[in-house]
Length: 261
Image 1 (cartoon, one colour):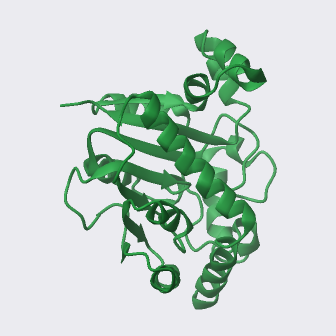
Image 2 (tube, one colour):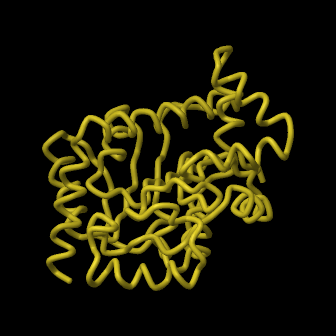
C-alpha cells in the first residue's frame, strides 16, 4: 500500500506543474470570477476553500491574486509538497491534511468553495457535500466537478464505457484497482466509487438552499456570440436538449450559489 501511495504522490506532484494543470487552474479561477461578476458579486479579497487541493496548484493560483486560501487534502505527502512550494513562493495558505467529510474550519467562511474531481472518490459523498455547503457564505459560490454517469466517456478508469457499467461490476473493478490493477486508476489510493448526474446533484443542492447553474447555463451567461454560446443557448432552451447535452460531457460540472439568507 505504501508503494501505491508513493506512486500516487509522485504522479500528482509531477502533474501539478504541467502546463495543462496550470491552464486548467487558471480556467477554473476565471470561470468562478466570471460567474461572480455576472451575479454582481465582489471579486476583491475573496476567501477561497480548495478541497482535494493535491499539491496546491489551484490554491496558489488564487493566493497569487491576493485572495485568502484554505486548502485540504487527505494525502500528507501532497500537502507537504504544497506547503513547501507555497513557502518558496511567499504565499500564506492554510494547508491542512484531513478528510473532506469533516472540515477543520468554521462555517460560512468561503466566498468561493471548490471541489474539483473529488466527490466521486469519497465514500460518504453526502457528508462531503454537506461540509462543503457549510463553508459557503450567503451569496457565496461553490464549484463542483465530478464523474458523469450519463456520458460513456470518462477519465477515472482506463476502461471503455465504464460509467455505464452496472453498480456491482463497478464495485468489483474498484477492488481490483486497489490490488492487482492500480494502473487502471493512475495508482490512485482512493479510486472513484460514485457516479453522478447533474440532475441528481442539482436536486440535492436546491433542497438545501442553493441555485445551480450547469456548464451550459454558464456558457450562456459568460460568453457573447460565437458557436459555443449559441449551442449552449439551444441546449438550455429545452429540458430534453439539456439532458441530451449532458450525455456528451465527461464530467458533471456546475456552480451553485447559496441563497442570501
